[in-house]
Length: 123
Length: 106
Image (cartoon, rainbow over all chains, first blue to last red; front, top):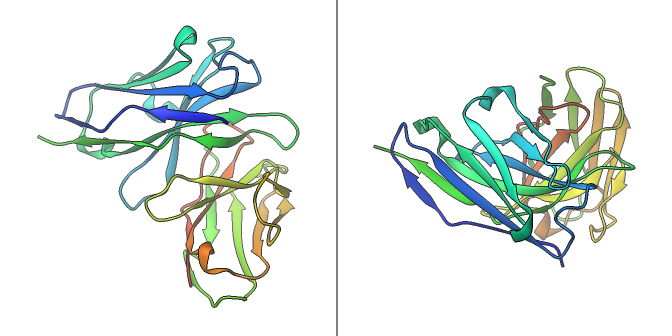
């Protein structure tokens, strides 16, 4: 079965960087039909899409809101995607999710999600 | 960015009720609309994609409709396990924005 397993909770100081990993299993990570998306949810708030990476092509796309602060990479051999977010501020305190994106008939949707990684930014 | 607006923001209903949640896009998005359910402390789960296609394993009491800018999620007969927050999401254009959520209270 498809699983996305994320790294553990992080506590960071303002100005620092954080890396969250997302290890995929149960499907071919490098299949061009799938991508890994990153979505965050601040406490009590809605969901916010950040970026995606196609593990087959390596193509990436970032939300303009996070451009310059976020970087999405992958290790195909390890079936793992990484999200690096820099210049952290208190407003970045949130749960960060990875999700598998699948396109095709019906359009893009996120059919499997990681368990979430809580990132707390506090001095 | 495409703005997604859901109504109502919260909804109180009884078991067995028919519930309708609406989602409006700030511009036409065709049928590129998904619905997710998030239970408290849990991960979002895909319910409906392409405005009306039921994700595998999702109970048939959930259905979606609409196109262009106006969409609805219908729960035909509310069950106790449907206590959750529901989000719409447009997949027409990046950034793939979500609505603010509708909290369903039983």
